[in-house]
Image (cartoon, rainbow, N blue to C red; front, side, top):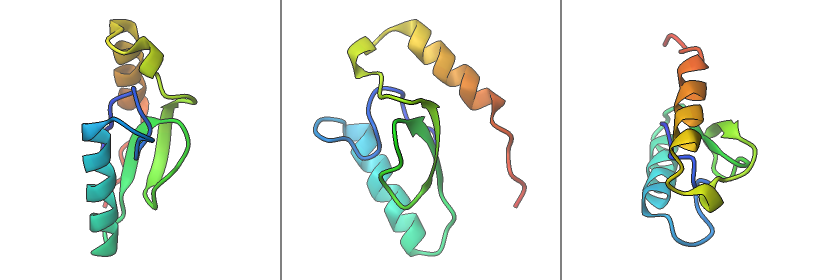
Length: 82
């Protein structure tokens, strides 16, 4: 799962997309799936986290450069074969 670069999964407050991703990841894990989240910050769910930034980028919300770097890092992550 690829999360936006603005808030951690789950967020500490606002973050509708991030909350939905956290709930979905946990539900999938409960059903026996191996879940990886590509996001920001530190691991806060049972899913494996691959961070593109060490810190959430909410202070730069809407900055296209942050989105570009995040997308470029996602593209560099090798896919695992099932």
